[in-house]
Amino acid sequence: MNLKTILLVLLFVLVAIFVLVCIMLTTSEKQSSCAYQPQAFPEHLHSEWSWLFADLTQEELIRVVQYLKSNLGVILEDASHASPSDNCIYFIDLYLPPKADTLLFLDHGGSRPPRQALAVVYYGNQPDPNVTEYVVGPLPELKYHQDVTVQKYGGQIPYHRRPPLAAEYKQMVHFLHSIVFPTAPSFMQEVLNYDGTNLAVMTTSPRGLKSGDRETWLVVFQNVIGYFLHPVGLEVLLDHSSLDTSHWIVKEVFYNGQYYRDLAQLEREFTEGHVHVEKVKRVPDDRDSTSMKPRVHHAEPGPLQYEPYGPRYSVRKNQVHSSCWSFAFRMDVSRGPHLLDIRFKGQRIIYELSVQDSMSIYGSSNPGGMSTRYMDLSFGIGRFVNPLVRGVDCPYSATFLDVHFLAGAERPIIIQDAICVFEQDIGRPLRRHYSNLQSLYYGGLPGTALVFRSVTTIGNYDYIWDFIFYPNGAIESKVQATGFVSSSFLHGNGLDYGNRVGDHTLGTIHTHFIGYKVDLDVGGKFPSLVGRFRLLVGLHLSAFWTFSVLSIHPPFMFKFFLLPTNGHWHFHQLKVQISVKVVGVFVPSSPYVCACICKSMTVKIAGHLCIHLAQVYI
Image 1 (cartoon, rainbow, N blue to C red):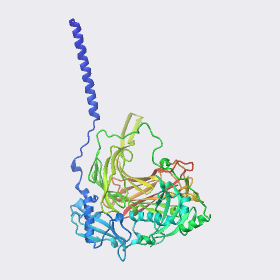
Image 2: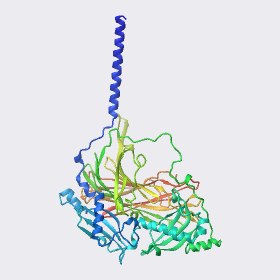
Image 3: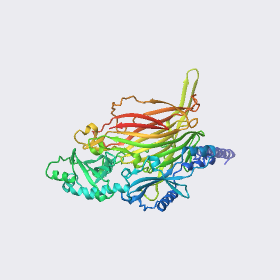
Image 4: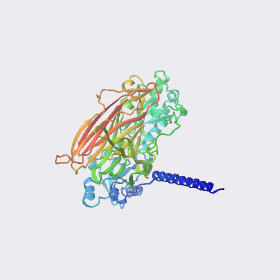
């Protein structure tokens, strides 16, 4: 081999090595730039003050239960299996210290407010049964329990006003199956195909038409997935005011547009051929049309959210901190998510932003539907939060947090992944401008938002509670309702009260009211308020729109700006936007399906700001 050939080979090898090195360096740089590099938030950005608003720990809840059992002087049964005639603890929650005491401690170095618990006790085993609320403290070494019932409500709470325990619901359903249904064997078997297990019962509220009543219309459905859409036409009014369940009585029975004294009378008239019967087709379990199981499976997964450098926020204990925002959070057993001491760039702008109640008023041609006035506070908005599914309820990259509470039982209950926190790309620029007039330029800022989310499921409805924080200082509180539409058995003039969503199913008309508390501290504790309404889509209250079942409706928004007390415009004005949407409320695939919508809003200002939003749809 001559020298020239050797030199050519060496040159080729050197070139190959150079190319390989360049490729390796380029690949290494690309991998390094895309690698996961979590941002480290300095610990000093999180404040120890957030414990003031933290939910009671499991150990604290157990300690309060033990204290009450030792100091109330009565026998307390476990609420999970208590009878109406028993004494029991309904729930225990954090008792928030007064705002004045809290701010004195946070802002002026005052004494630290004591950590206390609020305990609600049912006294059924007393000469004068009642409901009593106690403030128990100070934690961790408990020394006192103060009765605050009269202070809060102006008098004792009569026992008939108590929200039912889960045990009482079970006793009501058992009473129907074991005592009431057997009085009409022919009707139950021939008309409803009753076999002892294939019927479900749904409660209504309120429990009576006048003070002192404790009567509930119980609506009967087929016991299948999504039973809310399969009424069978039978409704029973049960008087369960007696503390002895054996003394409960049926006050009235309704079937297919007719009222009867009891089920025995319905049985007699049925056997005599005087009852107009509408037999409902049995829904097969293996192909239930109301199942949430997808009917179409996509071969390719949908788009995913990605954080190339990890989250740009941090969560420690019950405090969230980002480059612009910080706030503490808790989950109230009755009212749901609470955000406290909300700060924008270190300045407090809201002391408390929280859900207060969710109410729905129904109309129907059936007694169960026409009398229903649900106040979800009485069931427990925070109590019925449920685990969130990664990739469905929240992005895969979200931070998930557990919730624990004590309600309807003697031991704390843990709901895993009940809260999620994430930053999302809102899919549009926060601001941008393009110019090709005197000069050519473009400027824009990607739109992102920090989201705090939880979901409450009460009966047929799932409420998605979002608190959204934007980098420009705006806050949006949003609730989206999904789940299943509530229904009644369709008969007679039922279409005057809703729309047909099945052969014998009426999607009932109803109105939603959502209450928020917004305690604003912009420019101090006493800002003034300037407000205006803005309707995104104009409509009259009597107007009805037909829309696709799965469409997203325009939100109805209320915006307001705050000014300092001296009357001059403040540099840091605050815009709070609250919106309500109904998305994905499930109704069966049916040629009957159509819907309509109208919306309204009222605002009350009394000490703090309460914002009520209403949405009606059929």
